[in-house]
Image (tube, rainbow, N blue to C red; front, side, top):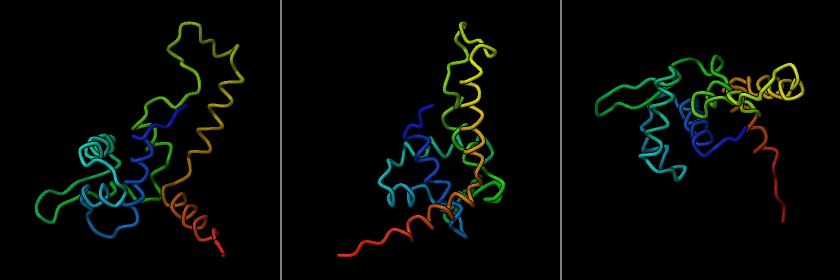
Length: 136
């Protein structure tokens, strides 16, 4: 499993939408995180197509989460953006699920770990950043 910039930026966008009480324009997210607006548009469209994000048109339009943050998982976000998150290429004709139970177990553990809700993920990230203190 490899998480590309698409997955990382998608999680960043979802975190921004979760933390906002209003509609957010993709340009705001792009500028804040130094992401190409066009690339972010593609990412948000994928998230929208997967019913994780909804949009509103118009001058005051923008994006918001389609579901509450406790109903969206990091796994759902990454799967929407990255596709199959398996460590093994199961389309390979040599893939044998019985013989490769070790790899299947790793896949299951990764999936379970990534089932953290967006809400809990944001809280965990905030907690980790607050714990970091530097003294000179």
